[in-house]
Image (cartoon, rainbow, N blue to C red; front, top):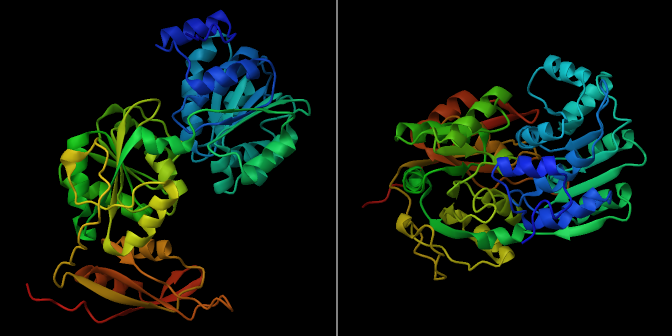
Length: 476
């Protein structure tokens, strides 16, 4: 059996790992550590939860030199505050064993403490691109002596538009450096980044993102939109620690409050919350104080919480890639987990296309909490649920800016209640708005939205909201 000592790590690190209860390397660690210790550039294809933090962190700690004032010797770039913080927390106790200092910098908090730590000397700096560039411009950090660079979650960096910043940062580091790049996918922009900034890299793959569809059991439930809250509460009560994904920030805050009222302790996490709020939410969820974390896609990558029993797609993801990364929050590092997707009638087509892209059986099932943890049977879809009699009202949304999306409209209306937006039409030739959309929500909430949003601003253009004819009531 391969051990960390067999991989060539120094004894102090091996003992520190043993003290932390870590004795056997995961596949990506066994593959990448020897090459990284040897000074090779490494391209690692591995998702979060596969153990890649130690795959790059251990050789980095074993080889990094001591830093001077404001001049780190190693740099780890991460796309989100949460991931930067977690990398730092995972490496800090190990760094003490080799007398090295690790510190994370990211936005959302004050500059003062970060500048103070940099002045005292940081051997391994973990950073998000935006805050690091700010501190470079303020001359609070000099990257010219950084001779080991790790780019973590490189595909997420590309998705978030960070690659230009990553390039500028890499250009400021030492010319003869070792570059380690880890990503769930290694094609597209990530391949270009590797081509331009790595020299003869060795590639290792272990536990690709696609394997997450096997590690967890996946269930697609056909439900009414108005019934999702009850089903979510029931799933969390049965499964325990669960992450519930919503599409919008307002939706996440609203659902967390609704779950709380149902006796399910819940906290929300999204980009609109301060760093302190995000840290407290993660702490409450990690400790078990709040069994439900309601989050937007900011949590689809970049957070690590052990023993997440279930992921709930309260709102469907945009595509197969987002589905995989959301779902990867459970079933991590060899553990088992369950993934539940709520599918309303008008979402069936997009969900079936996503299932085909993922190679999953195109089946929708009736909600059945007792079946969670068991592979979902491949059977025909259940009958389409009927809308509650007269409970919804359609609002006509006119004069939309052409760049407005369904997500924009749902976020705008979401503060007034549970909302669902449908097609928004624009002129494809001129890219101008000639169009309309329909927002469907409870009648009382809809009337309140009409009163307050008439003439509201969206995307720099005026938004006009007009009530449409209420949904026709049907006899029981």
